[in-house]
Length: 185
Image (tube, rainbow, N blue to C red; front, top):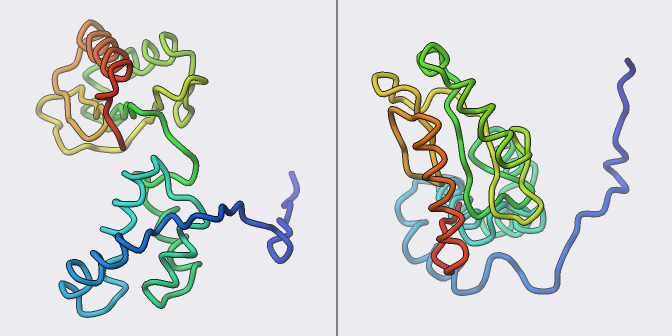
């Protein structure tokens, strides 16, 4: 295996004319977020969360816009986005299913849940269904070992899971999406 380098000096990031960080967002961040932190960079995480909630991922253009707003390097924004598993650089499904794979969940049968969801939705961990409804993640410890196995459906923790419970949650998420009340991430 050889290391393949990327032509980063000539790589073009996808852009759109409309900014991801709207003037209304920046005004609110200036008014409500920045005063909470000793440095502008302190507001990076809450801003990233907001952008991800708004667009179901954090586009590269948004990273550049955030860096400009906070007077930091775009690379610092990208380092943060790519360090944390909860942030995505590509759009995720309307329902993000994160199955815990910690040792407690492993002992309590997380693999059969993960395999069931993989087979039912036809995707592997870190993939999204073709219709954009579901993304499957295999996550590290969700901090609820005493109620294993557990999973997040969007940001809601579901405990003591069985295949039947997972199927009900998937069915519910699919119905919610059809009515416009679907979850977001």
